[in-house]
Amino acid sequence: MKINHYIYALAAAALMLFGMAACSPDDYDLGDKDVTPADLVEGQAYTITHDGQNPNIVYLKSQMADRYQVNWIEPQGRSQEKEVTLKIPFPGTYDVLFGVNTRGGYVYGDTAHFTVDEFCADFVNNELYTMLTGGVGQSKTWIPDNGNYGLCSGEVSYGDPSATNAEWNNFTSNWDPAANHEDESGNFMKSSITFDLKDGANVQSVTYDPNGVAKAQKGTYLLDLDNHKLNLTDCPLLHSPKWDDRQDAVGWQKDIHIVTLTNNQLRLAILRNPDTSGEGKWWLCFNFVSKDYADHYEAPEVEVFPTLEDGWMDFVEPKNDRIITYKLTGFDWYTKDGKAKGVTAFDAIDNLEDVTIVMNSSNHSYTFTAPDGNETKGTYTLSKDGIYSFTPALPTFAISKDGRAVMTTNESSLRILGFGQETNCNPQTGGLDNIVWGAREYDDQGKFYQYMGYQWTVVRAGVAKTYKGGLHLFDAGWTFQQSDDVFVKDGSDGTYTFTINGSCNNVYGVYLDIEKLLGDHPNCDVVVKSIQADGKDVAFDDAAIDRGVGDKESTARRYIVNPWGASAGLAAQCSFSKTFSVTVEVKMDVGAPFVKPDNAKAHHRATRGSHK
Image 1 (cartoon, rainbow, N blue to C red):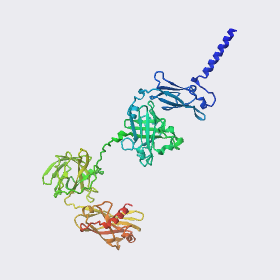
Image 2: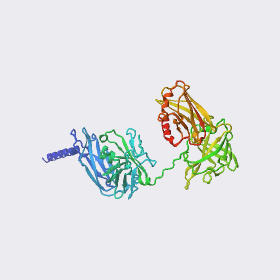
Image 3: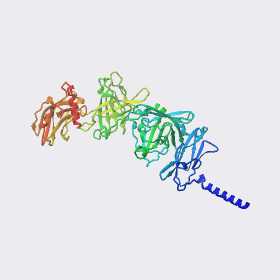
Image 4: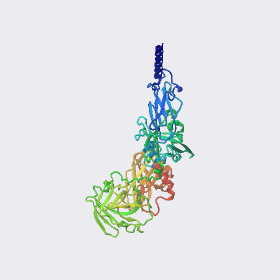
């Protein structure tokens, strides 16, 4: 009987062991039963244990059977691994939420807790913590990037999830809007977020809404050093209030990807939540710069240069005119990109135009004549950037009566800034009329900030200067016709006829332009002598036809038929089937300005009409 007792006892023990093995946490299987929160209990469905050597290392381990897809929400973010290792540097109580995927979605058990008692400096002795906070015992404030620091174009970037995983230092954006994209009022740019390592990992933010109202929040944070992620508690990621209703709390606090982190730049990306945003998944990358960097930032000087139009070399050194003589006719100060500043406070020396230079492009020689008649001869080169280099250098001398404007070179060089105020070529000969050379000027700190510009006019023997003129007509549908060019000779009065060959039965506007005439002769006049449609005279009153300026300020314009002026009624008489012509007398100087104050409104109407 005693033997049978032992046999039954062994059998019972075996059954108990088998039952324990079947329900072992190493293989926790609920069979076909639906999983409920009550099943997901710490110690049964999963375990939380501290490392025996370093209690700041915490192990999370699922005890569910392999057929269950698990999901952890833990202090360092989310994970679907069966086993997770946490490295917690700071003392405190931390939460763990464990769940599994079921036919109805993820089911989670109650929140579990674990405690870390001591600070582990080894876990924060890392470049990410140092760059984020400045180091142990320090703090660092970050502000939205306003696009002015050479890092990002604004405070937010967008990325396609199919093209990038927002990996560390590998984020690719598909849209980088300019600053204030999140808040056109600009108030959000006053916001800031501060991370520190002072008795823990603390974070605080101040967010300004579009009305300028500030909201402060405080919390803690934890870096996942292995996966380059940031997790926040009680203090959401700094973002514009316009996004508040489009992301859930987890989206602003957990699994925030650290896209870029340097001493000066911080970029953090979250994946847009389709359930709360009403839009598909998309990376939202928030761009910050350190406040200290922003406060001390000095934008690098961007070098700008005068822009010379295509083919400029062909008329600076034309193949059919190897020797060109220039005389110095004026000077001004110019911006770094070659725009005249219009300084008129300095009177030129009396014999300024005695200063000449003869350029021979066949052998690249020059002869320079100074105001005192002394000559300097040498050679020059002209670079593809429009820089003349003279050997020997051109002499230095005053060109204004007070001596403040000086003719000089920069280490024997001068740059072409442009070709006068407007067009660069004589419209009749195709040759160069004017050119401006510039010498760099530097401020008291030795910083280049402007050019001293020297204005040269081409001297041509036996070729009279001319001004290109043209008659322009447009109908009610803004279809334009124009005459052939007519060239008005400089220096003497003359009569000129402008003819349009064609037809038009609904004339709306007609104007006559003579280019550059006002630049040289502001007291000129252009008197209309006759208007003819198909050879028949059109009755007109010259006083009723507007005098003004054209599209460029040196263009003299007579608005023969001004749709917005007193001459609008002439349109009904100007229909033609073959030719329309206007004859004018050009007078170089009548002792009064061509454009009078009472012509100002007509000028604006004329300009508006020609640009319709």
